[in-house]
Every structure is written in structure tokens, then in C-alpha cells.
Image (tube, rainbow, N blue to C red):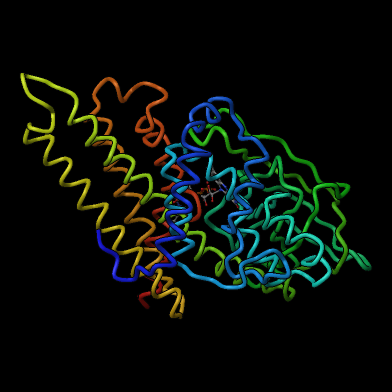
Amino acid sequence: MKNPFETEERAAWRKTLRDFVAAEITPFADQWDEAGSIPWELHQKVGALGVWGFGISEKYGGLGFDDCFMRAAYHEEFAKCGAGGVPTALAGRVISIEPIERLASSEIRARVLEDIVLGRKGSSLGVTEPGGGSDVANLKTTARRDGNHFVLNGSKTFITGAMTSDYFVIPARTGGPGLTGISLFFVEADTPGFSRTEISRKMGWWCSDQATLYFDDCRVPAENMMGEENKGFIAIMQNFNLERVALIAGMLGMMKVCLSASIDWAQTRETFGKKLIKHQVIRHKIADMSAKTDAVEAYLNQICWQVNEGPMPVAEICKAKFFTSKALEFCASEAMQIFGGAGYLRGNPVERIYREVKVMAIGGGSEEIMRDLAVRQMGL
Ligand SMILES: Cc1cc2nc3c(=O)[nH]c(=O)nc-3n(C[C@H](O)[C@H](O)[C@H](O)COP(=O)(O)OP(=O)(O)OC[C@H]3O[C@@H](n4cnc5c(N)ncnc54)[C@H](O)[C@@H]3O)c2cc1C
């Protein structure tokens, strides 16, 4: 579909990413996913492209500018490798970079940001707790002031990239109950009292690591508080917006894989004396998948434009997140149906995407929470 916001620079950026993914990722994605990890060198190769530098000053290895269309192109093109675990393993850091850049002390920024942005080190954001992820305002991990330190106690779970990350952004309770008692902390993996265990046997995203984190009298210097005391909730909520745009763009890439793989298969496979694509029922499935993909693409473009222009279109992002995960669910299911038995076999990207739909419908704000938030943003 034609993008009214396309520029030469954005088209060139997308082509660079597409060529990189085709040469460096897609041929190996299945093998890495089955093996359960990606090579660490890939982080550095991808970091060198600049994909993690949007909105980050050049002195910290960033690009020195931001553009939501270019951010979205990155997430869409990487998702097209057909194995969501690969872009997730790489981009787990994305949701922690912005809070570090905006809220960490200048000493921390100077020491760690360039390594993260250029892919030499990993970082993670740990919001979700074993007791719940949707109800962020009621998180239970505590941070108690003790002289020049804060002492953290509690646990986080499902944290992406956490087995390989050196740095963590952790919200913890410093005040009373609810959203006004939460602060953010910068925690390093080698801090005494910090430990982690890997979460295994997942439905999908096999080559990205998720972990449970434990804070057991974990002492961090008071300067590691990020931003103002008890103002962490709003920072987390703001951070969710671009995470959700990234997830929408990634889902668009997955929908395009479902559509193009289905078309290729339907043009090759024959039943009842003719190609699948000549059967009207299959043609209608392709039409429906294509229409939903166009709708998501147009929605995403509009959102990117609004993000660039400001203010942040929070309601539209929430609506687009659940709209897109539903559209992806449809496309993945129809693609599986078009492939028939061949879609049920491991190694087929459609099979993998079908397994990865649910994490997109739950992670970064579930469909239920997105609907709730959207309606609240509508003033209702
Ligand atoms: C692979 C993977 C990677 C992840 N990576 C990260 C990460 O890097 N960092 C991080 O912090 N978290 C991460 N998460 C956690 C994710 O964000 C949470 O799973 C998500 O926010 C939902 O929280 P929960 O699983 O605790 O579900 P719950 O909050 O327990 O909710 C369970 C179900 O109830 C529904 N529900 C809850 N409240 C309501 C309500 N008021 N009305 C209607 N329905 C409701 C939810 O929508 C959901 O369907 C990851 C999760 C997965 C699976």
C-alpha cells in the first residue's frame, strides 16, 4: 500500500534493514529458534545499524534524532524474518533505553548507554511480578531507604533479555499503596542480593530469553533512583507507548509474512485439478488477510505521524494494539488453514507465527487492558 508519509530517507532506511534481515537473519532464524539462542555478535551488528539510537544523543552512541516511521520500519522489517524470538532477543533492550536516557544520573548514562545502544551490553525493563503484570499500580517489590542506599526486596518475572542483560530498570515501591508510591531504579546484574533464573518451555519466542528476577536485600546506591521519588508509575506508562508502537509494527511484519507465504503456497499447491488460488474460498481468505494488513498499515502510519507531531496518541496506540493482535490472530489462523497439513510442521514460519500470536495479545499490555485504557482515554 502506498504510504503518504514516505520520504527518500525513510525508504532508504527500510531498504537497508530489509537487506540486512534477508542476508544476516532470515537464513538462520529457524536454526537459532530451535537452538534456543542467537549469537551475541548479532547484537553488535544490529547495534551498528543505529536501530537502538532513536531519540538518543550522539554522545551516547545514538542517532541524535527521532522518527517514529523509522522506528516502526525497524520492528516491521525484523519481524519479517519469521521467527519472533530473534527480534525479541535483540530488542529486549529497547524498552529500557529510553528511561535510562531520560531519567538515570549523568554518571550512569555516560557509563552504560553507549554499550547498550551499540549492542555490546544488554538491558531489560522488569515491571511484571509473579503476583501480576496488568495491575502495575499495585506492584509489590519494595525499595527501603537505608542511608545512602535503597534496599530492594521482591521479584519480577517474564523479563525479556534478563539472562543476558547487565543492566535493569526496576520499578519498586518507595511510598504508600497505589500508583503514587512507585519509583524506578537502575540495578546492575552483579549487585549482591540480585539473582535470576531462566524461564524455559515457552510456547514460542524460543531463541529469546525470559527470566524471573529476585531481589533479596539488594542494595543499590541512592543515586540509582531514576527520576523523582514516587513518580515512577507515570514514567512506566509513558514508556509503554513506544513499546506498543513497536509491537504493532512487529505484528504488521508477521501479518505480511502470513499473507505472502499463503499467496506463494496457494499459487503452487493444486487440489481438485486446479491451483488453490483458483478456488474462490481461498481467494476470499487472501482478500480478507490483505484488507486487514492494509488497515493495520494505514493505522500505524497515522499513529507514527501523530507521535512525530505530538502529543502522544495514547488512545489510538491502545486501540491499534488490540486491533492488530486480533488481525494477526486472524491472518495466522487463515494462513495455517491455507497450508493445510504442511502448516502444522515445525520450520514453517506460519506455524511459528501461529504460536507467537498470543504473546503479542498479552505482552506490553493485554487486549483487555488496552480496551480498558482506550475507553478511559476517551474520557469514559
Ligand atoms: C514472552 C513474554 C515476555 C515478556 N517480557 C516482559 C518484559 O520484558 N518486561 C515486563 O515487565 N514484562 C514482560 N512480560 C509480561 C507481560 O507484560 C505480562 O504477561 C502482561 O502484562 C500480563 O500480565 P500477567 O501475565 O501477570 O497477567 P494478569 O495481569 O494476571 O492478567 C491475566 C489475564 O486477566 C486479564 N485481566 C487482568 N485485569 C483485568 C481487568 N481489570 N479486566 C479484564 N481483564 C483483566 C488480562 O488481560 C489477562 O488476560 C512478558 C510476558 C511474556 C509472556
